[in-house]
Length: 323
Image (tube, rainbow, N blue to C red):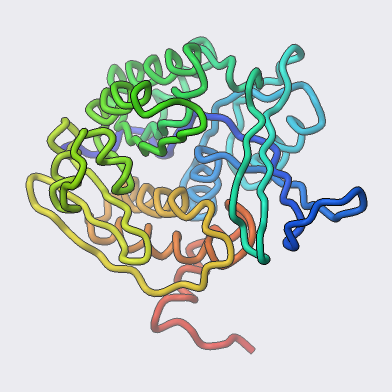
């Protein structure tokens, strides 16, 4: 970032959260097969991660006026997140299925067409919530949901800019929602308007139209779009960041992967928690890496997100067993 986070004290996110049905680890679905019902959504995952790390977080969305919508709101609010998601009596809550093969998650299928959140519009963006935040965090998923959500995201950016609130953007490209050709100009536009942009290598290549570029070239290219800071998530090798032309690499420690879904959101939550606290870039990256490594160790999209105390306990010098 070239400027500090906004004058507020927390983070506001906007996006869809769905009911999550996890199918049996055997991979076989029968009438009597046990399934697990939960929730998941990139923006709410980040909000929950921030709340667990002690950062005030607000999640803006829509849910259906149904049992699944009540579940989504109850779960997120129960994690200490402020929820601004009115129930829509005319549209359902979206749903996703997580499939397993050989005991490991292998595919996520989405059932979100016509969902309540796909009807988001600029009027759903709470001006006071955005104005009172330190950071507005967005992802490339919300604008992929349709014209209304895309307009809501752009409106939120305009509000944040007018109020001096920092904007962070995770590219988070979903090929099942829109084509690369449809996505690229919108993702590039939002990346250019952000103070911090996050991406994986393939996402950075898409945004930049730079197939075959090195990781250093990709992160520098993202920063050159206009963001003060660009972060390239490189999985088990940690993360690269570019700020003011200087590239920083912070490696991560090996992690046992039980469920890889949610690792990127956990990284962003850890990074933003340190950003709001005014920590150095290296600390932002280190905490992001630690959060990502912990969340993949348990089933679920967000259940393994750590608190500050858990981060301290699992640090290299904090691994003693408490008896």
